[in-house]
Image (cartoon, rainbow, N blue to C red; front, side):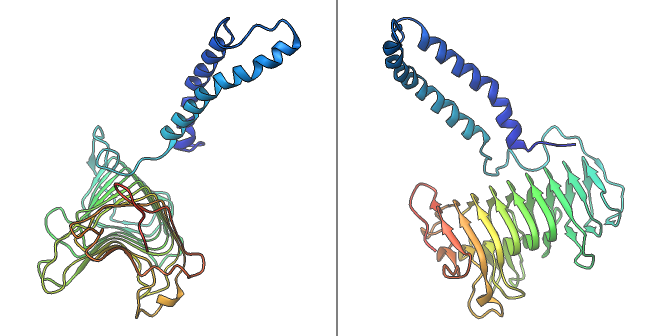
Length: 332
């Protein structure tokens, strides 16, 4: 059973090197002529102490800085998401409707849409050619998707949500295909995941998007794209991250340290208060913190701007530390 977090384990592995570095600096600092005078009297010893502290300070700062950099999670990319390269996959022969609690699917190639009607389901290091959805009809259905690849449409375009809708976690995975990559209607965590490659609607009717946020979502260290082309009269990307307030209020969402990839759509993120929606005045607790936005062809992340329809005055809303790749603050 896992008892420590990945970040804690990385920090633990750094301790021996850090302690060795500190010990070496202490040894050097105490050698004659190394910056610490020999103490012939208590007064001499007192005078030598600041010199030793000054000698140790840069080394301690360097060790601490290196440990923090190593422990900080990386933004999702092609190398650290999806099925690991060495994972051997076997065909999945189980049911596509999962009703048994705590079902585990590990190292499998799934070729159907998975309907999650059980709690505690785990899908790990697997390739899913289909969709994954937790049923809203059962109040405790839930799943975790870890280091897996999900492609909703390997043989042709499908206008579907790839992963959703309630009580789920996606970690270190690659999500592609469909017209909406992930729908977080309620209680989800998307962490260090690569969202991209939405399908093109040749009929020109359907909008595409990366992640749709509803309530109680956490979106951390992801690479979020919406890259489907525009098709007349109405198809094309809305945004990598959407939240409108049309079917319910957008509330209590943390959007932190993600990379928003420049999009073919109008903006890179809708902030929950789109005008004219039934619940647009009820948005609250939406926090954009420390994200990075790419410049697109228009100079913005999308055609019009980086972020739209974000109400700074809404209760609990925050927009801090968001910057352009290459420098400069992003406004909302």
